[in-house]
Image 1 (cartoon, one colour):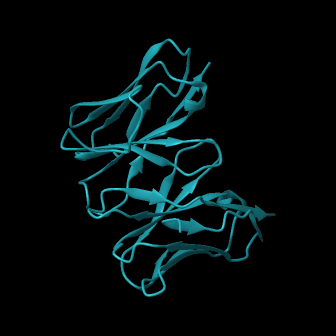
Image 2 (image 1 turned 120 degrees about the vertical axis):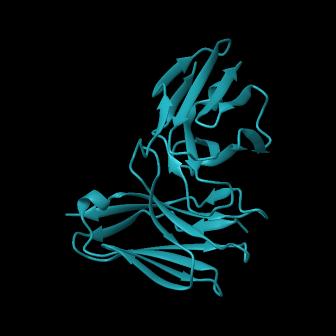
Image 3 (image 1 turned 45 degrees about the vertical axis):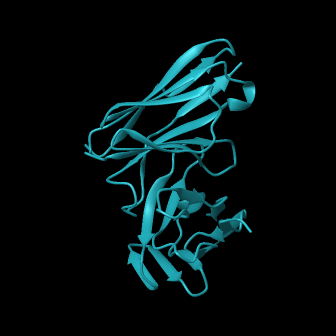
Length: 114
Length: 112
């Protein structure tokens, strides 16, 4: 298995809703990442987990709450989002942090906040 | 100065020609460099990595690195219409190399 699987692929949510994005990999990777990508912009790092512990939070608003229940699973809990949070949310993984071998990205969740 | 800079394009290249994509970075301590390809509406796909000065070839792709000039490039030989995509340069930029920072990307169009 050489994939990072993200669900759902598309999500439309209201500003008062609570939803979660899910990311799963079975490659034995110990570092996992959430990126946000707006149209025609590069991916921007949100969170980094290493061995299930939060390593980096890029000053992301608290309406985004990450969770890493185990080494294969990464969630992003969403609450009270704003329309400007609409974007492609990308999960990625790598063998280790700092191993400098690049990431494997999932196919992303396209989020629309209405 | 941005940490990773690319010419945003668009860059149009005739089919069969060589496409040349360029990237500069600001962190002299960076040790690894990556090129990702992203088709419209899709996620980035790693196509090349390079760690040492010089050239690295993989099929029609050649990555070139010059650490003294803080410059990395990607050459695509015999360009095909399927190469039309946005190409993102990515460099680990913080102290522990934990953070992969992307350039703004170059949009490449191969003209049949």
